[in-house]
Image (cartoon, rainbow, N blue to C red):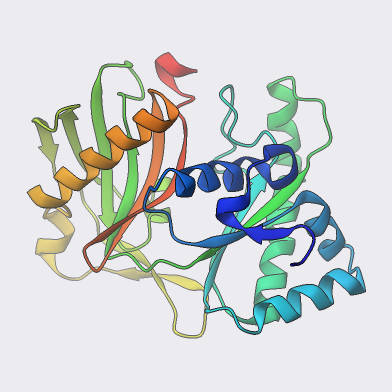
Length: 275
């Protein structure tokens, strides 16, 4: 056992492992479909970015027998608190392979948590404590489609599920690079509205690691819907399970790989009626 590096389901202290790892750990303990991974503590990450030989050696030994690639995600202390979400401020580095690439990704994630933009956002919220950045190291999922889901309407607070979906990795939706498909459903799964977007690009993984944007040529994929009725049923089940375990008003990132729905992030909604 490496001090400061534990299986994700054991990450039960937000002050040590950051908000994302603690939330995903709680989701795993609740039996939700989270890809497996590991939590790197604030102190361990600090040692890695300051080139501590013992920490670097420990990470190298740890990675030798672990299946790769990984998603390397920011897990800042207070990052996904009820009053704030740092989505868009702190980086996620996807499809990272090998010690050199994973270590570089950890540096990028740590730097994003200490950037001028992140510090200014903290100041705007009245958060005066020094940024403390942990890292979530997670099995990479390669979804055919992905996106975000809100278990209450993120603007009005209405009791309905809102899903935005696009092809490939969900960052294309989070970063607003396409007009995603949108689905609105009642909490019991009754469809209120579905509207196809314009999804002419996708973010896809590269064989040697990393990702790139690729154009979508098929008109049916560009203007057709990503999700079918059985998939929507699974999404509604996941939304209700997340609310059961963590309370109403959840902001969820998800991906579907080979017909398996994965929960990639579950935090409080911090927009509209929930802000």
